[in-house]
Image 1 (cartoon, rainbow, N blue to C red):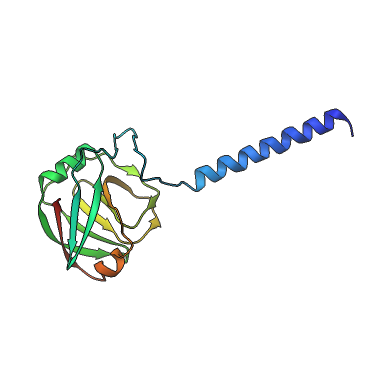
Image 2 (tube, helix red, strand yellow; image 1 turned 30 degrees about the vertical axis):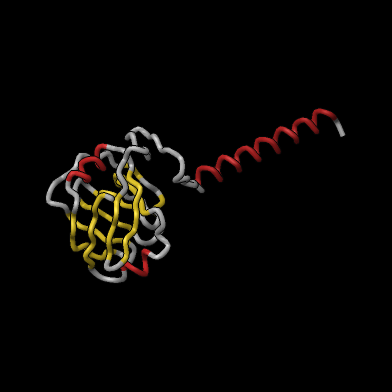
Amino acid sequence: MNKKIIIAISIIILVLITCVFAWTKLNNPVEDRNKTINLNNNIGEEKNMPRLNIKIGDATFTATLYDNETTREFIESLPLTINMSELNGNEKYYYMDKSLKINPENIGDITKGDLMIYGSNCLVLFYKSFSTSYSYTKLGYIDDASDLEQVIGKGNINITFELQ
């Protein structure tokens, strides 16, 4: 075969492999929660952030908080015992009395155990993972949410949020 044809085919294959790799990266994001996330809204896990206990019935879940202005404002309202309402079979929500300073982003993928703010005052705890087109401000996440769906159950439920 002609050298020019072999080089052209090699370049085409290399371009195709690069395109497939880039498409896979963009369409299958993997969130590594052990890394610091430092986006435009300055979300990051910081060692100096307090830990959060989330009490549901007899169960207590520990949550890692992101270091951002919204989370710091949320912490000021703790301890907080509220009746959270059921929504869509995947989340519990509660409208807080006070609006928080927010910096929402299109999350894309919700992970079971995520704790976020929708709008400026709607506290949301997700108990199932799914994709979304809605924008939220991240507060933190439950470290081990494997039993969360069983514990949280269906319907409205009282939940206590307090610092460790």
